[in-house]
Image (tube, rainbow, N blue to C red):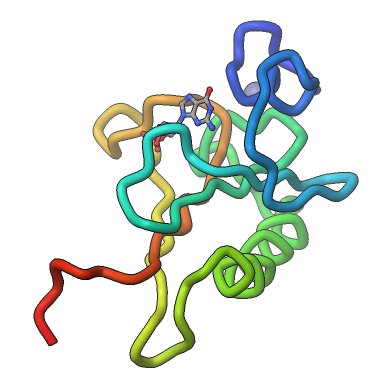
Length: 118
Ligand code: 5GP
Ligand code: ZN
């Protein structure tokens, strides 16, 4: 499913460039254009699912694969190892959940935090 008005579908289609982190037949990961952390990338399904609100049990395998890829890609992109290092996973959902792009995406944010106390 491709939504012609969706910025992330355009990235998947190669119509908008991105800094790719990972790709397979059902998942794409790329750096966020406006990072909130030293490491900040997004994991998205290639199928246009608008948000977590539309997810069903049929998507459990896909979501499981996204979550299982997150730590592997976080390490690859420079997040330090657990427990001193680590990362945050955020899935904004709907306007009241802070979602701006309506194509399901999992934020992974981490990396060295020089401003953080000891
Ligand atoms: P949301 O608020 O919907 O959870 O987050 C959407 C995220 O997508 C934001 O962090 C924003 O910086 C990122 N974003 C929006 N447009 C683009 C784009 O064209 N390319 C990339 N790489 N990231 C984008
Ligand atoms: Zn889309």
